[in-house]
Image (cartoon, rainbow, N blue to C red; front, side, top):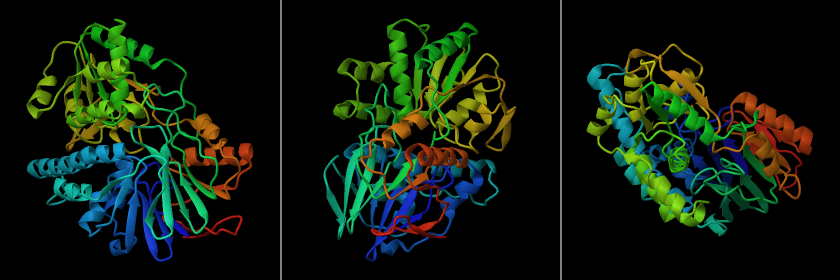
Length: 462
């Protein structure tokens, strides 16, 4: 079996891993590159393999850096199955349609205002491309072994992180290859802890937070302090948020704060039709998260849902304190960008930046105290208070990753550290080597490795 690292190698985005086994080709994850321009340009690179050779795709979860490239493959002729958990399938339906629609709207906006260097600016894919991709989804229940191609089976286990997220075990030719996907927190208030995996011949483990530990401060206390402080100066707290996972966690904490009267009685707006649709899935898949019926109902109703563009624009004219949660989580697109243009220049407001901000994104620039960010061809000054909040992450930190790895009954023959910025991946590599004594390496983009059932370490070619 051979594996080629087509994304999330040397970076935290663009997850794609190509498996080749007996002239069959399977892609584990199919994500978009996000962040720095040089990474985003990979989304338009020529494909590294003929789409006609691809037999199956397996998704660990729905976030676009793991699923968002799927419509590109479908536009280029892919017609095979796409396997994922039932909840991931439902989330992908929401995310891909929204992604295609936003790309079309962004291209139209840039062309109408002449903001693009390209004439015309073209979307990477369209909403119609996304619709075609959704027809290929094949739900797979957790813990069910499924043969996806001849002599290759998969088994999915809960990885925490977000609704539907899973680790993927691939078994072929007597070899067990495990993909961690994105691992969740051990004590996440919404999602269950990642399930233990006891054995693997080869392992790919994420390293988003491989070089750090999460703060121990209470997220509710931090939220209450920021929102109250902003409200006292009659400002608006703007929270860029991922529509899947982060938005729901924020609403859970805000529901608890409102219930305890720990924050002022001000309106909370969820300005993301996608996040609104996602939130309803938490009621449908109640067995897959920790929330009680009461807490789930409270989370789903704490915010006013903003669906129309007209209502979204009117939020920027609000002159009384409020909390606005809007996608995207790293301020790379969507409705939050328009809110930034209106709210960031005013010192009475607060930009609350929750969680990891990938390098090259507007979110990363804002957290780094940039005096301005470029939006739609213009520099928008950042005069609002900026608060970086690291207590809402849905990713396991370095200690939690190591604890998950200790669940293996025997060391894998080799472990590949992926899905992390270079320093995070290398720090985790060193910890795995020193603390666990495992054979471990950090692959580079487009590395290709032969996985042998006999050799103690893999053979790599680039």
